[in-house]
Length: 150
Length: 150
DNA sequence: CTTGCACCCGTAGTGGCTACGGGTTGCAGA
DNA sequence: TCTGCAACCCGTAGCCACTACGGGTGCAAG
Image 1 (tube, rainbow over the protein chains, first blue to last red):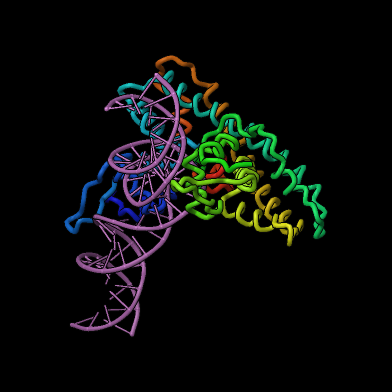
Image 2 (image 1 turned 30 degrees about the vertical axis):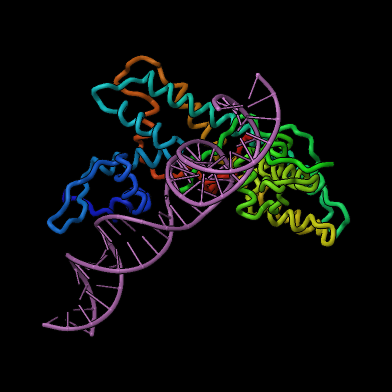
């Protein structure tokens, strides 16, 4: 039961060591106790919290959403309704993004398949990009800085 | 046929005015001529180029990919094979992202649907996030700073 | 003459990390 | 005991693709 170093915590959760320090800086992870030499000393609770965060990040929740989820996860105020609200909002975003990406996939696949590969004077991909009908492709998605393989 | 101001160019292409200046700074768009008062004076060619860029960005191509596409689009060296290579690489990324998002969608939809909405002691979403099986969800996707509704 | 708009510029902020440089400590092997 | 190097410490800068901000200039209408 002796405490973990940051390196062991990072390895145990699969989170980059620098990311652990970053989470501490933005107060997503609490500052742990320090050893006499100033090294961070983590407990089991830290591992559980960081594993939760990692899993939520993998599912594309934003840091702010995770902050909310973590506060709702405190035993005193387990509110399934509020959690579901956050999850549902995120699900809606994921579905919108999915639809956008499917549209892109269609356009790209169709256009690329028409490419001969020859040094032709006209290229279907370039023609498609040059065709200036103003119809936007993405209906919904903002940039997401979310999905990340860890 | 008199030249456009930056405002008119932005409006004509649907690109944010500040983004046009940004594209000039990173040399994705050429510096246009200036009027006596120092205002940018754009020609038709600029509109075509910016419309091409916008459409490629909507399709999720990176700035660097667009740079390559633009140089391949020059009439002297229309190389359909190289264009197809870029498009195919991007299509592969889109498909990988699509698969990841579909996995997320499944997990989120299934878990959220099991939420009662009551202030229950245990919440399926929180339980799922706390469950520490180390299986990563995303196989492939790096962060993308790409897809953006304009 | 003032108001208001469109433009000019450089710089900083966004999200979520990741990398870098330079310093200190801990421990294992020779 | 010395040596080397890995692991930790810290602050800061860089990544992408913008977006926002603050402060200045020029010009026309009211």
